[in-house]
Length: 128
Figure 1 (cartoon, helix red, strand yellow):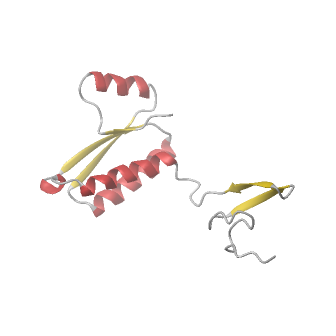
Figure 2 (cartoon, helix red, strand yellow):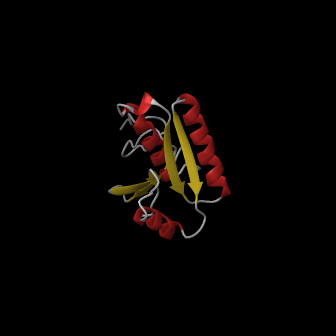
């Protein structure tokens, strides 16, 4: 039998072009262990960038400078990566300014306090 799967895909399920290792279990079922292309980029960073890009299509956003307040938590490495992403975003979109507020501890309580006080950040990240 000839496999028509792409060179970097699972020969059984043809699961994409990601790097992977496949474990066959009795040729009936199998599991693909997929390695992410960007192991240092978390889902929250992807969501943050997606959210920021969503403001590009909103009518009236370009009328003046728009300021987005983003609250998050994380270590020094995550904060550095998020700042790089935001800097690139602001260079590409000069009418939008993003202010990142990193809350290292008591994140949930501080976010709830800001919401109760009527001054929530525009974007905040929650754990599921």
